[in-house]
Length: 160
Image 1 (cartoon, rainbow, N blue to C red):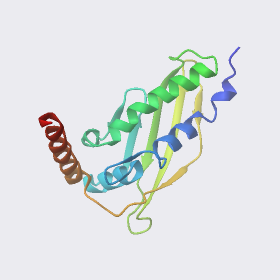
Image 2: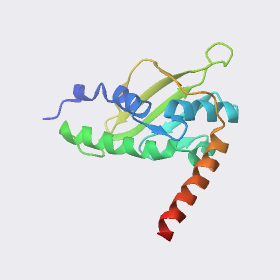
Image 3: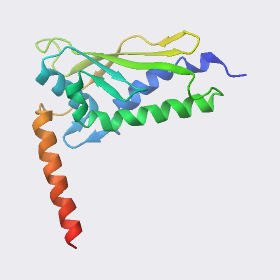
Image 4: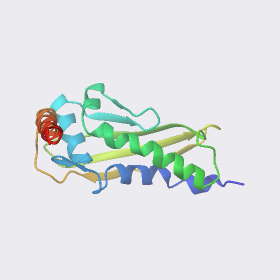
């Protein structure tokens, strides 16, 4: 018989996994990409939908944030299976990210993860504070530079 209390730490684990230092891409970690993109778009709230692999606002879906977000669904399914639940036991999994005022906290984001199961029970933690580590960069310009570099490397290996 699976125990639901084993899932209480899952929202925290998903958030820490997504914003962890193992998820580096190009010029920064996921907190760097998210913070810089949100400031560039002038939004103060971003929602990461783990099950549907979407980001609100949609303009941010073109960034490396999506690449790392898709892996969270696999982590969620593995955790459910290890605890004896069906992989569709969680029907909603979102991480709400709040970007505080730039003048007060220039490299801090606040995360509020929440999961909802098929019986309507909510699994959430308190505020999780994450920090951006790298210097400020333009994520939309950076993505173009990375894709052009990637295409040059790809052409180089095709010619060999």
